[in-house]
Image (cartoon, rainbow, N blue to C red):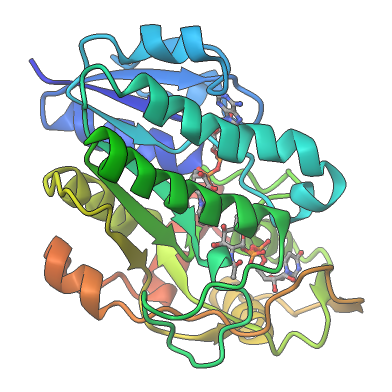
Length: 307
Ligand code: NAD
Ligand code: UD2
């Protein structure tokens, strides 16, 4: 039986990936420190090693006998990188280097989560993979660092790596109660019960919201590549949605009146972030992504519908 290591497997995206791997009959080992992840996110059959992805001995033991590693463990928040620069750096970049280093003896493939945050404020949208990378946040800088070290892993140590630059991922199990959670989970949870939402800045900033199942499909497809040249791909839809439009769509879907308060823009906020999906669709063989309205419906269903 093929066994995979999923770091961050008790988190939002990781738990959906574990489910998909187990559903096709593979075995799954998870390395997670449960800092934002939850034991109850893990599907039955996933084996949890509770530990730190930046600890070399823990990671070496976790990698023993696996066919490949999906490296998703990170402090997945631009905001947290502002308040805890060094702490997020340790999880987000040292963690990735620890995984690459531990993969050296066996040269198992590593598919890892990068982010649209590596681009910073891109001059042209939709953003192609070859665009300049000028991250505006510690989070984005560390994700770019992951990509650079993945090149070292591939070119110097012959470890196959694929980086996936996720844009704004959403779906069931994204925790709406965390202040660091994605905007869709926060807005859905509040708007459905008529609570006010905060809009940072004028709400005209745009994002490319990609449904979690489409991200899982991309992760699994990337593991099949086993390339030698450390490629990176956008994982996105190509559709821009403003934060204000998002809020109105959720209000419409839930039949509630929108109560929005404007707040000052966030530090390091990117104005427009929409990815060009052509390369990943071609190389990873991805189908059309789920529409935002359908995905929002699934999130609202998971939350229990409008109240
Ligand atoms: P998440 O917080 O739900 O999952 C991250 C997991 O990593 C959690 O289970 C957490 O407990 C674990 N973790 C954190 N630090 C750790 C450490 N030091 N050792 C071991 N485990 C640790 O977030 P997510 O949204 O599922 O993100 C998964 C990955 O995708 C992250 O690398 C994130 O940066 C990346 N990403 C997410 C998005 C998004 O929109 N959600 C977009 C771009 C990239
Ligand atoms: C960044 C990355 C994304 C991912 C994520 C991890 C970019 C473009 N995207 O997402 O790829 O790595 O970090 O966390 O770098 N907002 C509000 N009100 C709220 C919450 C959010 O207005 O209550 C706005 C926020 O200011 C931003 C948008 O909604 O403009 C999306 O915010 P987010 O925190 O969901 O994600 P973002 O874009 O920082």
